[in-house]
Image (cartoon, rainbow, N blue to C red; front, side):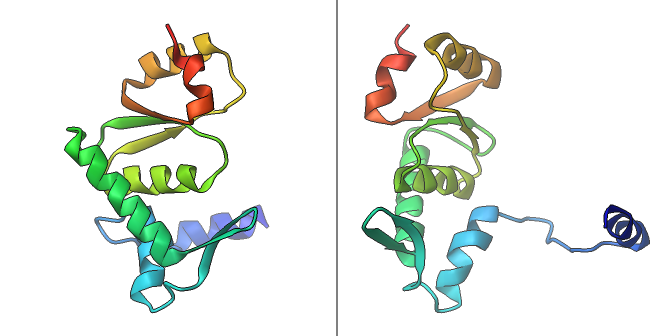
Length: 136
C-alpha cells in the first residue's frame, strides 16, 4: 500500500491545493457555502452543534483574537478540554491566520510554562478549571 502511494506521488501531485488554503474554511465554512450549514458538525453529550454554529462561533473567536492584537502566524496555545470550545478556538485561530498549539490537559504546570516559552505563544486560551496550571 505504501509503495502504491509513493508511486502515485512520484508520478505527479495527488492533490492540488490553491496557493492560499485555510483548513478551517475547508472543514467548516465550505459546508455552510454548500448549503449544509444545518447539518450536525459536533455531538458533545446531549448537545448537537451545526456547521453554521461552528462557523459563527469560530468567526467570533477569530475576530476576538484580532481585537486583542494578534496577527497571522502568531501562536495561540490551547489548554482546553475536549469540548466545543476547543473546536471554536482551533478553527478560529486558523481562520485569522494564527497557529493553534493544542496541548495535553494532563501535563504539569512546568510543562505548560516550557511550551508557552518554547512556542512563543502570544496568548493562551484555557479551560477555567485548568487556569491554576498556568500559575507561575
